Image 1 (cartoon, protein in one colour):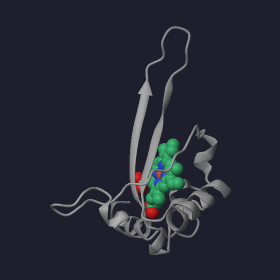
Image 2: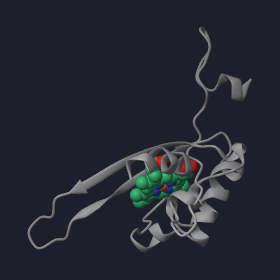
Image 3: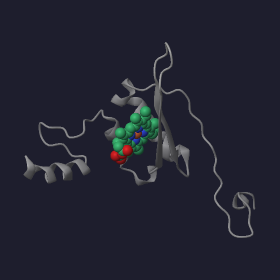
Image 4: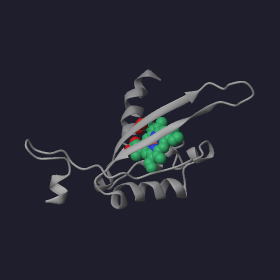
Length: 119
Ligand code: HEM
C-alpha cells in the first residue's frame, strides 16, 4: 500500500476518484464546499466550542463559522446554496443563527477608519 500513497494524495488534492474507490464522495461537505470559480474564494475561520454539560443537561458543542469576503452575494451565497442543496454534514449540524457585518478597510496614516468609503 505504501507505494500508492503518493498517487492517492495527488488524486485527493485534485479531488479525483479512483474507479471503485471514491476518495471524496460527491455528497461530502468538502466536495460540495469546493469552488471551481476562483471568484467565489472566501477566507475561512472556524471557532469550535464544547461546553461541558452541567447537571441534567446535554453537551453544548458546535462551530462558529466565520468567513471574510468582499462580496457576500457573489462569494458566500453561491457556496451556502450548494451546501443547502446537498451536504451530508447537514445530517449532523443544526444552524442556529447567522449575521453579516460590514468591515471597513484600514486607513492610511492621517486618515480614519472608513474614510475610503465616505470620501
Ligand atoms: C459545523 C459546521 C462545519 C464544519 C464542522 C465544517 C467542517 C469542514 C471540514 C472538516 C472541512 C475540510 C478541512 C478544511 O478544509 O478545513 C471543511 C472545508 C470547507 N468548508 Fe466547512 N464546515 C462547516 C461549515 C461550513 C460552512 C457554513 C461553510 C460555508 C458556507 C463551509 C465552507 C467550507 C469550505 C469552502 C471548505 C473548503 C473546501 C475545499 O476543500 O475547497 N463550511 N469544512
